[in-house]
Length: 196
Image (cartoon, rainbow, N blue to C red; front, side):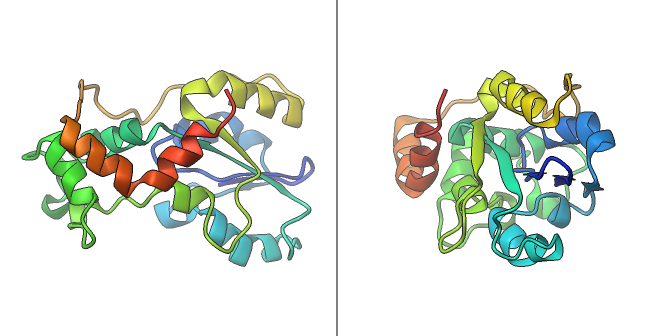
């Protein structure tokens, strides 16, 4: 999470959406930088409204504008799946011995196993009963997000590439894809409604 005090902007770091690269590039410009621990770095919209906004002197969440990125839901889960295949991942969170279909099926279960507990982007960005993030950009259209930041912050921005999950072509079988689309209907609807 980054707070740009003078510009009235807060960047909420959705997991697996280049947040480390964004923080690396923009932390020198921010008044508040929260990079660790992950629970604070990835402060969601609900936690921001309940805990951070009042701390910033913004009890109604009206002074600061929030922004974040959202990744296409299947690609987002693919990034989690690849990330958790790392050799140093703890066994209960590891996906090394699973197919992508296995991982997504587990993610869609009401009681998710530890390796599939990765949250949901729609819940992170648009929590029920709380103000949603004001400006959500597609991760796949990073240039639009950068353009927004450059205008808002009044500077040119160049994002480094860091903390990238290993590349691996992934696909879902049609039944598992249909299961995911049903389970994550809110995520697909939110992503589909984002402007290009």
